[in-house]
Length: 251
Image 1: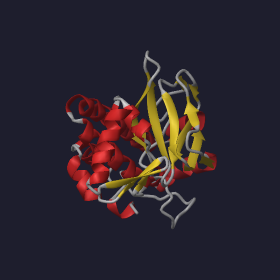
Image 2: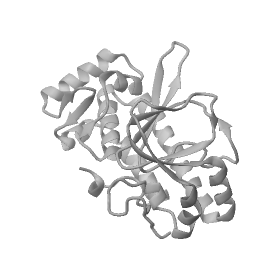
Image 3: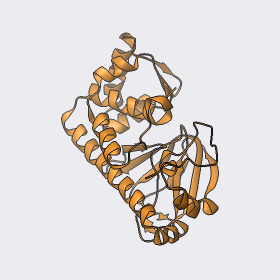
């Protein structure tokens, strides 16, 4: 499948890798209906039960979080989606209710398209349907891996994994995650993640900033992490080669 970069910002790293993987003819089916917008951190895209009428493609450092509500009132973050992916009815055959909260974690540019326009384009192009089906497979693999990771890996390993996962998608060493947000991702109390962060700070791996973490030594952080990110990347490469953010795309 020939790579094709979005013409919105052709010489800029602020792109959607998933849209950039489309064949030119497939991108031409979507481009008249794509709208570029800026979304702020903390902006809610969907609540559980909302009608999913729009698909969002994060551009550049934009980052989206999926949160599942629990009976005790806590939201647990499950996966992050950046420029390698999309949020919304990618493979559905019509508007469906959202299962979880979908929140903008790191603000920035997004392309969006209505589910109805996307459906019409997929009916015209088997290759377009196939690409989005492959992306859905990658997203499902990411969820499977997150479930296994939560079951078998330590809080330190999972903390390092989440920070690296955010770095991969934003392309920046400044990661927009707070102690509370990391605790939500891990499904643990804030005190646990705070202790891990203090250890990482003492070892010179990262610094804390207001509402963010600054990674000083990615290699050392990687050594503390489990290998779940690598498993997800390998599956992306097998199924959608070149879509997952590469080293050259990072700051």
